[in-house]
Image (cartoon, rainbow, N blue to C red; front, side):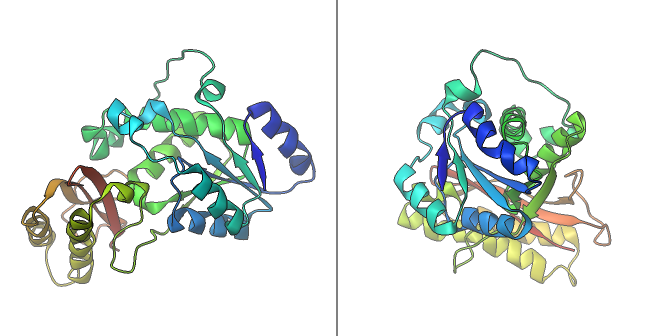
Length: 279
């Protein structure tokens, strides 16, 4: 496993592979890796000859400086996980490497940018697409792999790819859950034992909606799911919606294709998101 810190060194390493027509996959991460990230690498290995995993805590996507400050950075642990996963290349640049000078970035990501997470974290997806574009430019991957847990993020990256006419193929990979249903997240490290128990209501509410989808109408499903979460101590609901998976607009017609249930809540001091595909 090679660890690279500069774009120039990365290009030097990858260029002969591209010339040899090897397929290159990128798994972008902010570190604090868990089994969900490992699953992305494992899926990427089935599609590509070379897997590059980036670790970069991107400052431009944090709407709260305190959130950036407390983001976990367990580097030794991450390196061990990547080595065990058989990752080929780790790209770990500095902030100076990715942002050598001040720059402005604002692209049209469509109306969905301002819904759900976009409403609670204004400007977040501009920062996300800014760094993902930089990573795509550095790696020039054939494929890039993202976790379905960040459902809206994948949609925004798809819109960015379309905006610039990039040729990279995006692959959305299933959410990996703990045995009790909690979606794996780098943020789970901040949960106290009590928070951890309370957080289970998010996956329980999503599972309830999925399991009762055929016999109950959407307004009744939403009412029950929101009540489940709101009645759980220590959990503050931001939203629970059933939406069109392309526009993220609320949908009440169960026959509408591509429906997804999405939830965000603050559990103790930690904000968690989760989702489930419905049809």
